[in-house]
Image 1 (cartoon, one colour):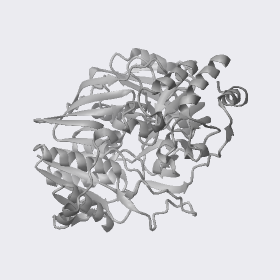
Image 2 (image 1 turned 135 degrees about the horizontal axis):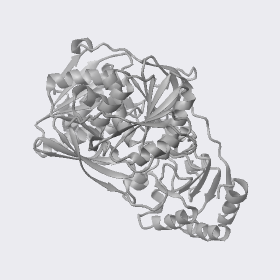
Image 3 (image 1 turned 90 degrees about the vertical axis):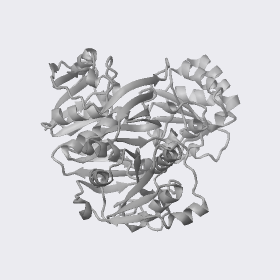
Image 4 (image 1 turned 120 degrees about the vertical axis):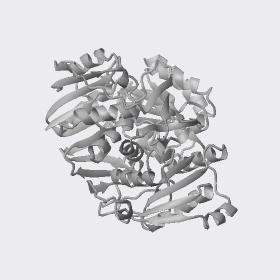
Length: 249
Length: 313
């Protein structure tokens, strides 16, 4: 079966985020960018399905400026077969991303679409579910285990208070949680090979989607800093402070 | 304005998070209806009817909603909600699952995980794991919003007397079915609503050592949490994880034991009223946010803490 994986280019998770002094956003100039960590897990899961003989083709798609072809190449180096870049310089919000992905799903007709559960920049946790709704597919969100069985997929989900397992008819959408797998690193020969793998570039217009931001960010501020308190000498002093000063026990 | 709040519950009791979502609805202003969708969830509807500020409770009681499947809830809420100006629910795993489907079906944007209401169309939400706080305005006619419960003090659970109305809307998309669940069994308070939380990190060294923390938690009536490092190392299950990728907590007292204080963890607990850190590394970043820091070997400090607490409690 064919698996479609969506990946997003975001600030590297190790980079300390700084809010711009004019409060218009986060400073991304000269900042290291990388594939969103949840998307790496999505790519890895698809590659494992291919290694098990369940998937026969992995198509990776990314939406954004030209630079996000780097992340598509990374996915190709990890084992995806072909890439689609939807070039968009403007701010593409979740609903529009879902509409673009829906158009790709209609073209490619994958049996399974795997996305990260959220991106670590906007922290929205929306696109996979929106795509599933728009395409009329079932969804297995926050997956910690994915088992394909014929025309069904069983997805174990990380939910408040434990785990929940669902059975979904294929085609379906899965969004990844952290414990689904541990992504591999790309080897140098595979990075070289990835450069020769096919990568199609298209525009939102090619897919018949008009980008129309519904949300306007009025300002972005640094969170209120929490100031460090005091160091206590020993446990007895700690308990005394908690009881008599903070009055929380 | 009219606001529809989708209740979070387990078919038998209303989650306190719902009372915080009603508080967010009050901050927006307007008539507040609560939709209880579930199976044999009459007790939840009764509880919702007593909540302060609720005008009407709508009940969709059907097997199709028993396991809160996102496909079915999405269709139900999109249909019931289209007459409202706002649709709100808690940003728990159930709300995060079905709400974007509602937004997509209504062709509107969703504003996720708000912590403050600025006006009827403008909301404040953390981005970049809480390292930046964005003020966002939506231009859609129906505002679909998920609410971070710790951002709003819950309304009173008692005192209201809303009318309860049964809905005869059955949406079964037939796309998914429930197979099973594994609920972590614990007599301790739920992490998300506990007044005191004690969490362990990589410094705990193994899962067995968390028993030390359990004893302290039992003395304090505290919920138990963990850092992502402790979860990744396999010491404890993932549903204990506090942080950007786990639960967001804001208790009266948060005790971090053997946790260095990675940004990812701080994003999940830095709104706690009082933070205590116990760590042997005095350079650990957790001390920069702690009200009370104790530089000590946790294997000595935690048993001492238990003894000292026994004296004063």
